View 1: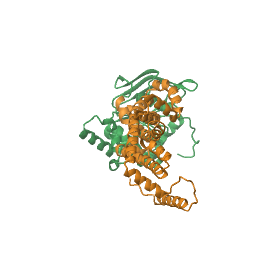
View 2 (view 1 turned 30 degrees about the horizontal axis):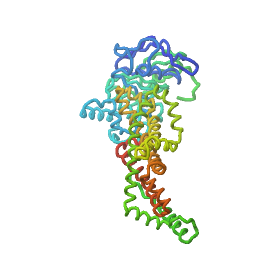
View 3 (view 1 turned 180 degrees about the horizontal axis):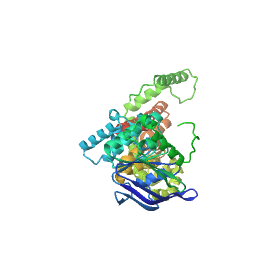
View 4 (view 1 turned 90 degrees about the vertical axis):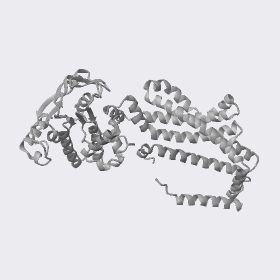
Length: 257
Length: 254
């Protein structure tokens, strides 16, 4: 589905060009949920932007279904962390969700918008302006807008990073359901280890400078997952430890999970 | 969206008028040509009755609004290009900064020289006065937040659709501010042009009534000018709210 081989990215910086990513190999299969973890500044967002066609690579080859990525590919939609700056404040929730599918005829468009809003549980709020909604709801609007495009791949850049813990948990479960229901491939960038283990089929850790993939780990936890039951499983805890270790934490360094 | 009447504010205004009347009548204020409000009202009645006011107001409004409307078209179009196309901005910036630093009033005698004592002079001055706030606000408004433009790309909108569905609506509230500022400056500069250039309209009425030592009528003209400004601003705001409800609401202007 998505693959990148020997990807490298160099961006201009204040003190000359900075080599952000180097020698990144990543393959994401159809329907897979892959998380990209890394400390802040590790190049996670850059990697996602390259996959989404928003940033061009300096070297290597990135393809989506065998086609080279140059510009945002069809069927691939990015969801940003800063929902407040990604929604159009002058459009109602409904019209925001419709933004990417306005070429479709009205019946089709309306039914897709209704479907997307229902998936994120916002059917009742469709006439409101986004800035009247809570942060969690605004992020659900952005996700619904992506879903209305019926994407094959969702690229999500720390989508729940700005939300409180309870909202985050409920959105994680909603995303999990939607991804399963629609069979959408998800590449999910986060710096939250628990979140990555909980949601993913596989997670990769970006490390080093320039960064490449330091650890790739399958997460064979059974689905559907549950915020309490899954997180109490011994294999969940073990995976979590492994990832923390890969990120450079020593056991016992943190007081509690 | 019903605006509540500011009762206290209105009471202070009425009290101020009463005080003015009292101070003039009791002789505490002794300017020879300071009329009390009652005399201003009489003057207003005279101007209305003999048709002078209607003619002058019509003339001034025509000149100011024509100049403003043309400035609106030119300002929004040129401002969009300047805001959206980097190289155009780079080449024009120095000239724009120099021109806008020039006080607009200094342009009035130039316009009189170029266009004579005519209504064209007034329209040109009104146009030039309104052009700056509209142009600069449009340029600013068109500098859309990068993330919004990126959102358009992510959703596979064409370049034209990004402009039409994202960048223009994002700029609307700022452009409306420019249009309102432009309207008030074009009215002011039209009056100046009528005082020193074309002998017509409210500006000229004001000057002649002063020279004819008719303070009641002169103050009445001042009053009408003030009310005209308030009404015009209200009309533009109302029209903008009707046309761009979402944009202005999100900018906290509705």
